[in-house]
Length: 86
Image (cartoon, rainbow, N blue to C red; front, top):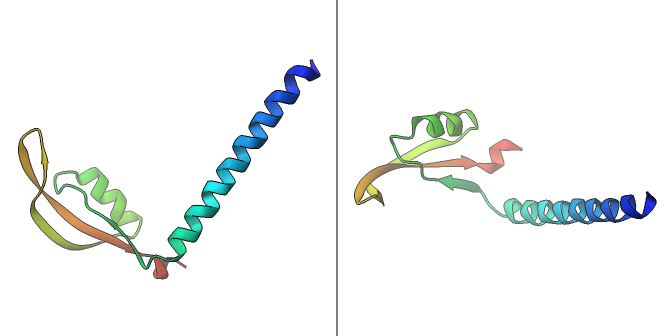
């Protein structure tokens, strides 16, 4: 049985290490940002409510900002000020 457990444990340890490395890289990148932008379609109210709860603020509405299935849709420009989150 130990022969089976050892490879699984090593595999999980490597996955965990890879995950921690990815998190560290992202934190370093995010530390350089002042704000995190996002641009949801105006008709995606579920996403907009979530972003508002997370602290994103509306900045502008872009007319015909994106095209899906041959139709143009407006989008809100929103952003989360990262320095206020600390």
